Image (tube, rainbow, N blue to C red; front, top):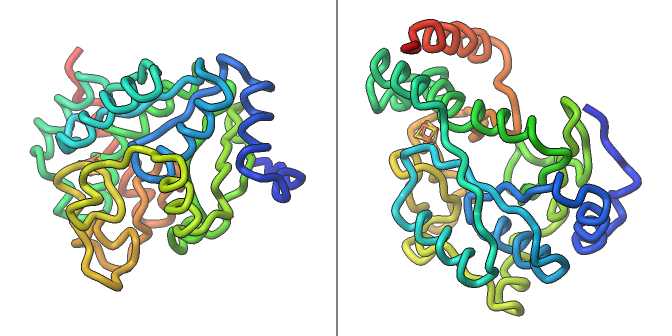
Length: 248
Ligand code: SF4
């Protein structure tokens, strides 16, 4: 992992402008249509109407997220690229472990995320030079060291909002009338797959509604942070089993 520290003093707008000019069509915004992702889309669309946006359809998304795909298409005129998991891998996963394996243990949950999110993302990134995400350092312990610009596996990862606060995100949304995911109106503060996300109570951590049944684990799916130690080794075994049992 290479961190480009000289970008740390640059603003979100400066970083996005640089990225759009530097990578052109080789750049795409990855989003699940949460507030930060929508801020990044709005900011980039003002600079370049041709900016690319993609999302991963895990097959377990809430209906409201599909509505957001239409919202972005209509508001910004951006044809959102929808990335799907490999059908044979999902068939093997569900046949071997059942549809709701994520409730069993952390490694089972990460296996589901790996097949439905991480592997499709890796395939998409292999076609890009750079991707933009909406991570913020104040979203929790696992994100406190996010770099504004870094590179890994030959792809540059750009987090222009890394040093933004939740209030700055809200201020931008209000100032620019950015469309919001309907589930925020129902008490959600972080939005992912339907079975793995719930609304949070007042005062709870921003990401407490993600995989809420897990205790003392980093609330991440492996897209941004790899699992460590025992969970990582167990995950490797499970992934190997699922891919080996994949129908031809
Ligand atoms: S968030 Fe839940 S349903 Fe979605 S990929 Fe991860 S474990 Fe599977």
